[in-house]
Length: 328
Image (cartoon, rainbow, N blue to C red):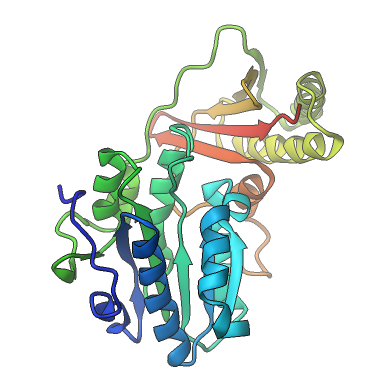
């Protein structure tokens, strides 16, 4: 793989970022130091503003502060979001950050600097990040948008750098901009991250359910586990709604019912819902349904309410694992 490619992030080296002025463009950019990072981001943002388009910078905190300073002369043309907050759960980035920004600027080409992966991302979070990056290509296909994704090549491990090449159709390196030979399409790239989850601990509290009448018991069970784990009132209410959505989907779409399990990990309450259904649409929970639609909001809501959501689906069943942060 090419994870060790050196990146030229001068304006000249990044001029190819601005070559795709219509349609969807999704290049990956490897940076090795702060100068690389700021140079690449400035080139991308300034080209977009010069073309008359709005820019969103959605990167984690320290990088966000640096880019605010570097792009301050562009004024209101650039909008900012802390990816460590808005994208804490990678499953909410597409609907809540990227699509929301595009919807706020109808009829205009939007440009986004999005950094969903940084050295502080945990091993449990990372597969959801990689899946998100792959699915951007499907969600934005045909849209008038450019999304530049910087990756810290100096601090991220080689496996994660290799994945940049798999999830981005274009890469910017020392030899300029070129197609990634390892990008096989949005859904093929996303499927690499549809990975089995670690087993449920033996000490987990588990409840089985089969019929709609049992949903009240599921909600009460969830409330008790949330309170015992020390979640706030708001967190408890959010988790009850999320679990109820998933349990109701199980009952409506699978004849065998499902199970809900709870356990604690350092800093988190973890909840897992298992059933015998197969989640065939990899974009479920990523695209808001039409206002007139009566369904299709379950996973979208779960992603919005929980701090991390991991999904593993296969023909014989689906596992959805939710994490809620426990505040000391």
